[in-house]
Length: 98
Image (cartoon, rainbow, N blue to C red; front, side, top):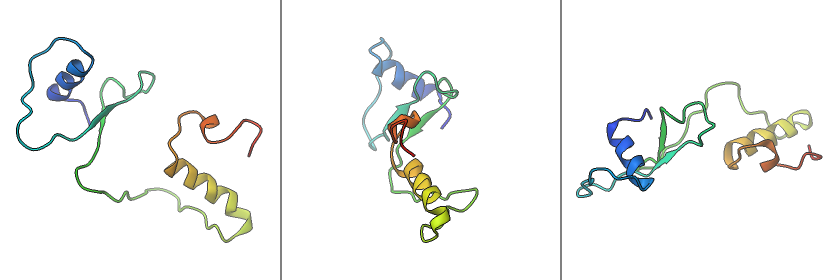
């Protein structure tokens, strides 16, 4: 989501800076997360947690089948990148692992 004025005020207040008091009455606000400063969209975008569960629709090539021996490693790699939180590759496996 693109950051708007309201989000900028929330981020500013969360960082301990002085800002105007935010009205917290009404519907509970969705959780917001900022990107790490090295991320290319850190200054313009945030990630918001959906109120209701959402099923993502993947666009692009199909995930390889796990039954085939020649694609089993690609299948495992695809699932790891989708469902295990990671930043650098060594979060998923050691440098000497495949």
